[in-house]
Image 1: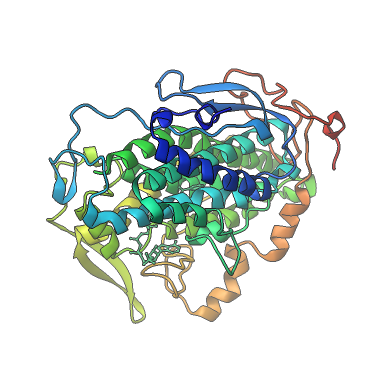
Image 2: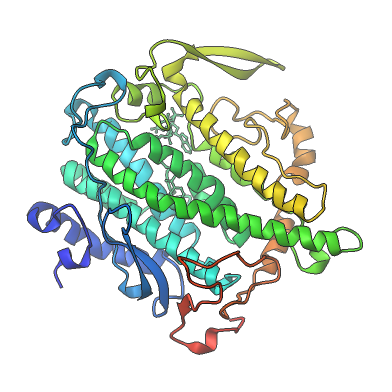
Length: 477
Ligand code: BYC
Ligand code: FE
Ligand code: FE
């Protein structure tokens, strides 16, 4: 089979011999990485997966049972918009670029590599989760997310190979060499070196960290560099599912915890085999604060430069009247001495924070939905987002201690309260102890409620996974 057949694409791959050659060389390394670092233990099983086969709004994905080891990752760019001109920044109004502008080569490469690096990182973080899937439905969703993050890596590597020559090929190799959490060759961004060993972490990650992905991709989707804009626009259509997995996954845990809490004589979920609502809050605090770090520094020259270069816009840049962002200031709150003070910076330097503002609002909506579920079980307990200063390790508020409501505090006081606000090692162990596989069609682990409906019109008890070894169904192997 030729590479062109192996890689579904709409970039006329077969016509570009040089690109074909580069990708043909990279593909074996990718497959080796996938075998070593991709989802563990399901190579021979048939999973009901969607595969991107075109960019048609109506039917871009094909759903079928696929043997994991036969999965094919495609390369797709959204169709160009007609008569496209650059929407924002110093090059506003000029025709979009189809080639890399020489003066922005370094900046663009850095953006693409940073984006690319997160994709395999997340697959590595999720490598072992299949062994403890709470259901066949959830196992299928995990593997769906994994193959799509793999495809996102392909999308970025395609850009590196096509537009960055030898540097691009070297970067593409390095993307397969770094490893999440490895102190010698870590992934680039902080959150992507954290462990996601349990399904509560996985659902928090897909809620909060994939949502950073949505906002970063959204701001790249108007890039003046058209191939990046078109690649990220198509990635966003897949991202929606990852966010659904996270938001609905946490919601189902919350529902079960609330039901068990309401039923328990002492109002606790854990004696009933569930996750405590307090524990869910602490996991939320951890993943949300870590994901806030992914937006970079509040006062950022990089962000200003990328916007000026018309490479990285704001979320839904088309909403704005002024696409230059030269006028106006942004006021940041910052610790000055012992007290909070304000700091005014030019709008362009504040664009990381502007993007974070949109993200925070979106997260608030999600938490409101989870709280509705708790209320429907008759409990007064409510989840909430911690303040954006809480537990930050990047930017203006890093290296300082703030309570979840954003008040400055002494490091010793923070350490004393740490286990009230963030999951302790013991708490992680107790969550991990709940994680036992439940692989029979239509059955679910006790700590999570079933979903309302199945995938793409299929019932909840559909055989989303056909195990090559039928003994695995129902076994706690
Ligand atoms: N950890 O001005 P600064 C996704 C670095 S997620 C470590 O603050 P800038 C996905 C920064 O790189 C979306 N380092 O930052 C989700 C810089 O280093 P250098 C991923 C960090 O550049 C789930 C230095 O600190 N996409 O797709 O304005 C599953 C100071 O720079 C961190 C993107 O991120 C951190 N948290 O903004 C799968 C889009 N934060 O270069 C996938 C591309 C900052 O001086 N990336 N640093 O050595 C960007 O737009 C920007 O690089 C960032 C940072 C927004 C990340
Ligand atoms: Fe992705
Ligand atoms: Fe994602």
